[in-house]
Length: 144
Image (cartoon, rainbow, N blue to C red; front, side, top):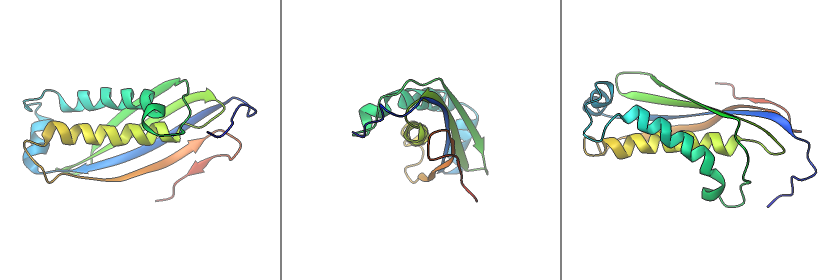
């Protein structure tokens, strides 16, 4: 692992997103909360938060960090495309980009798992870092 012990603690924030496209039947099951597995959006939200906290166990050489907060948002971009946007904040000596990226990936994967009986053709895409602040490398803002 990279030694971050000499780096100063700073307030760090990362925002990431993922998208999942699905059939109208799957989207309607999510919207009407009629999925036999339960409330898909709330389960995916909890899964994203858990993933944030478990990132260092999932990604080799990723530092274990203290998380100050996790904000999970979802938005329907169309009748059949759902976007997850997650903001992770920490005060420490290493960034939170991997935590945010892991969280949006797991949110989308949870939707897939909960809806795969309805639609096995779902597509997860656009997993990306949108912005980050803090640290010696400075801020980053994706231009879209």
